[in-house]
Length: 217
Ligand code: SAH
Ligand code: MG
Image (tube, rainbow, N blue to C red):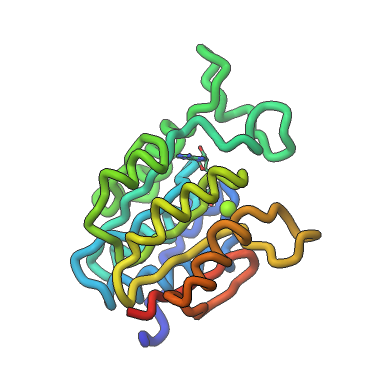
């Protein structure tokens, strides 16, 4: 188990703060820390993020890759989840492409990675979660799932990605709410519970709605 990770650069903190997204700093700190741990445990395999949006969480993982000498692959179709479409509470009109009226967060992600100077540590994949997962059969040291939060999307993400976590690798899940009053249930019911109930994973950290599980073997 690693000690305290090196402190995060003030310039990177400034870019994170100015980036649109849904990752609270306390949870980002945990993601970065566990990212470093995962890359150290499981050599030569990337961190995979499902749900890049504009890169707010990606930056924490990218810094882990910089520190540990690894790489992040971040996957998103960039058309937004159902619950952030126009008309929904968390919709941000500034990520709509004015030409088409559809969401397009890819230019924002590119801008984020460039501003933070982390392009060399991150590969961006634009595509549907299940399609891309089928293409990546090599496994991962850590998979961070923060994509679609609908029942079916969360179920498909669990089916697609959980098997790809390498032995001793980490599965991090965002928006896990054991208490239904705190938020939507699919990440809890469809990803977190099945992973734990399979007996293959042990929980090693919980910060806000972030949960970190490790694969036993
Ligand atoms: N991790 C980000 C927030 C992600 S929001 C942060 O902390 O800031 C969820 C993202 O998942 C959205 O950008 C949406 O486009 C993406 N998404 C939802 N369902 C998806 C699917 N089936 N395939 C690919 N991306 C998906
Ligand atoms: Mg989230």
